[in-house]
Image (cartoon, rainbow, N blue to C red; front, side, top):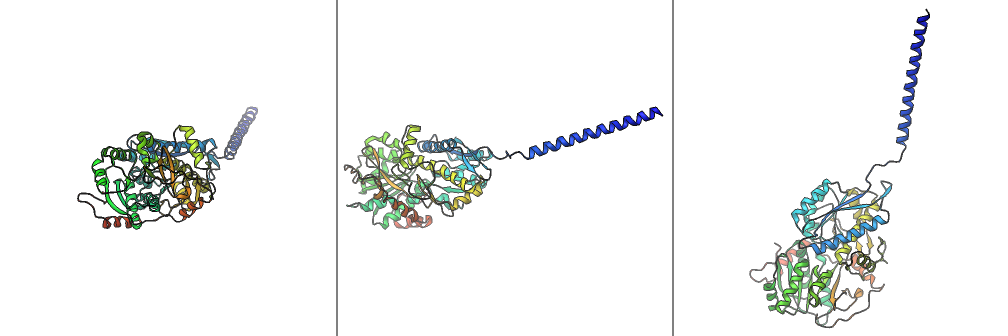
Length: 474
């Protein structure tokens, strides 16, 4: 009897102990679940990754390096200020640039942007130049990742129906319009113009727009031809231009060919009243490389240091005006920034503002946000049309005068009178005033608009082209 009693008591004690153990486990698990679920969420990215390639070698390296330096300066400014606020995540995030040297090669661009997609970047920035941007755009579009263009200006980029490609700079069709306006204002006014452009997508966009515009202003086109940008000698074509009696040469493509044109003109002893080239004269290396040959050469410019948009509203960014950007870039890199550096920095500002305003890192959401953005930075006005093409930004004309790059058009923001003929002494004028800023406001609201296809048709039907020469895009 006694043994049975102790046996039952032992079983009861064991059962109680087991129940206690189970209860302890349940309580501990409950406490763990409660404490872990009540902690602040730490999910989501810790950095905003922005992928790109840049031509840091090859024929486009000079402007590619300037563009990269502009973007790196923007990233440095963002991170030193605590990052970009992303409201959907409830925190600010730093930015990280992931970039590769594409060697100015479209095949490399295609390969590298596919690689950037697999790396899970949040956004893409296009490489410098239109051909390289056109190589990157299909990849961004296929993966629904926003691609911001800072150095691809060809109108053809925005004629392909892309939904994720947005331009920050004025398109190619706008480049030479202010040059024609400047020439039209001269007294005496030149009458004969020669066009000699590269046959890349960007230069062709410029040519298609400027030719009918020049005709509409009463200029006679005495030469009209394209060239291969990779050519190393243009003396045959420049000799033809000299024989036509042209007073003004308008053309170019990028940096290397632009310098070659000037050296070839000098070797031939050809004296024109004015030369206006795309891109190349904007780079400070143009003066360093050519010396006195640079004097009098003009360039359509997306930005110059004397421009001040700080009084326009809404204004965004930590850069107060063009002069401050110039000074900061000079301090950081030891070289004067060209407009390619400024537009690259401004591209970072555009992305930054769209992320802040949308509160998202989703490319589709940020792209939709950009459709409604309308603001100013130190670089000028930002506003796009339904295709993503820039319609708010306006351009000026700059000219090398006695070793200094002066803004010469529009006259209201000029730092010097146009030097025409280019052999005359320069005549500085007062710098931009507050009242002159209204000119940019007016131009921003009413940009010169020439439809891409329409101008192409006008090009084919207007001119008498010498045998063996082509005005049609190849």
